[in-house]
Length: 57
Image (tube, rainbow, N blue to C red; front, side, top):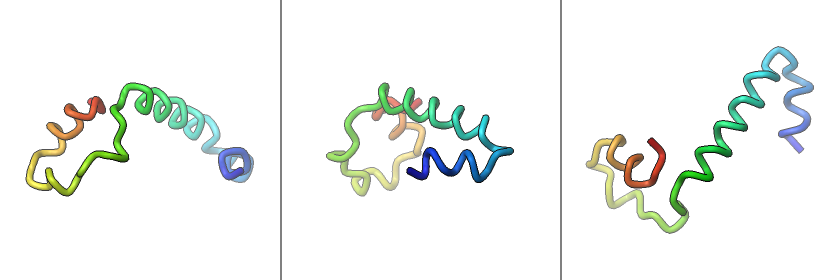
């Protein structure tokens, strides 16, 4: 519901909102399944390597 109402309430940001939604969907399709990923095991790794491993580069 917020996805539909917020662009109406924040009219000036509508274009950016929909661009970000499209980018998020695209990244989500490319990424590995992350609910089972143990992020706490890689706190000391640079974020670049974690993103690369998950397909988020």
